[in-house]
Amino acid sequence: MPCPASPVFSFRPPSPAVEDTGRLGMLAARAFSLIGRRVLSTSVCARTHGHEVTKAPHYTEPVYEDYPLIPLPDIPFIQDLSPEQKALKEKEKGSWAALSPDEKIALYHMKFDKTFAEMLKPSNNWKTAIGLAGYMVGIAAFFFIWEVLYVLKPVPHTLSEDWKAMELQKHLDMKPDPITGLCSKKASAVRVSGRRNCSLLGSWHSSSLPGSRRPRGKRSERCPCLPAKERAVVMGIGMSKVVEGLYLGSISDAEDKENLMKHGITHILSVHNNAKPLLEGMTYLCISASDSSNQNLIQHFKECIRFVHECRLHGGACLIHCLAGVSRSTTILVAYLMTVTSFGWRECLAAAKAVRSYVSPNFGFQKQLQEYEATLLQEYRTWVLMEYGKNPFPDQEELQRLLSPKEEKMEEEEEEEEEEEEEEEEEEEEDCEVFGAF
Image (tube, rainbow, N blue to C red; front, side, top):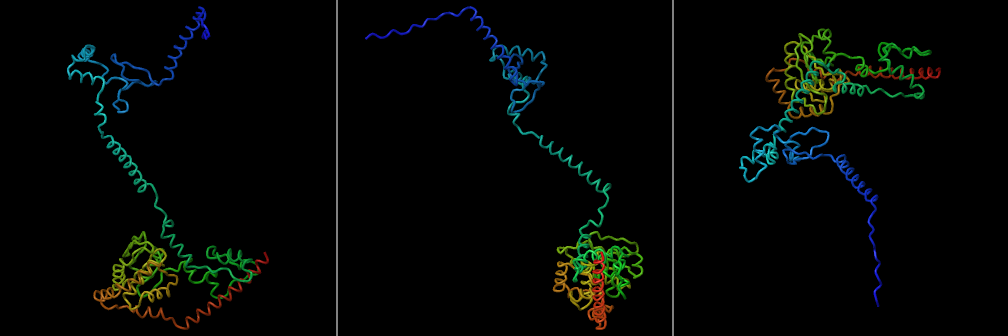
């Protein structure tokens, strides 16, 4: 069976017009391709001394630099060739084998300053960076210290941690009684604004309201809103005499020169963070210590005992104080009384409270007094006896008297407390009436 005839394809040459159009299209495509590559490319080819060596970025001046990431710089190392170097470049165009090793090295260093191995060597730039950083830190530290010493004012003592602790302890010791009574809820505004704040307002009292009257007796001579303990803290009780020639007080007492002279104070033992001599003519022992449970006061007991005892033996009087006369100074006072008497720390603290009711060493100081009594007390008593002899002051009898008050005094205090309670009840009723009137 014969195979079918395959189709015959015939080629017809393009017309001259179509051929000219195709050639123009190819030329245009090449032109736009070159322009596009030049526009889109980020570098152009540069030639130096007849050799293509690198690609220089657009819009930048070509520079030479030795950097491992750019092994071929934009320009050769030597730009202006000497006559000998130009002659060597002409010789380079000939046979490379005709060049000696020194000439090859010279040709290399016309293009490059360092070899690639030399570029990889570690440099000392880190030393320069650290030096500059240290210089800047030193300048900043100098200006900071200069401002602290000569520009900034001292921080007010009311912002110190000691002062804040003193204020907190003061309010904790005051323990203001809550408002009680049948109509306490209605009368709370009058009681809080009137009776509770009279220590701050001074002359204002509930008696200024219609239908009320001022308390009778001794209460008319003092602030009726606070008991004796709280009133002493708010209004200032002054320094307290504990035994002959020994006083306990606050920092305000240590600054009151007139009052110090009045009590014959010659020596001052300061125990607080910023302890320093304040007045001329006084002998000081300054102990820097914070009112913290972690503060170690035992290490200062011996020098404090020596200071106080020698002051008294020479006929002087010593004031021991901290900021409030509550915690640190009381701890030193109790340690001294334990050493010159036969009482323990609890009895000595009770005697101090008998003359200054709101004294209260913090828990850490009480533990230190306990430790002192158990370990060092007998040793210190022997030391005082051997160095100064028998105690010539009746400290034992004075403390015993403070610890054993007379029954009559206790009865008087109880009667006074009962009278005050009755008067407070009357005032509460009057306040209720006044509140109802409003």
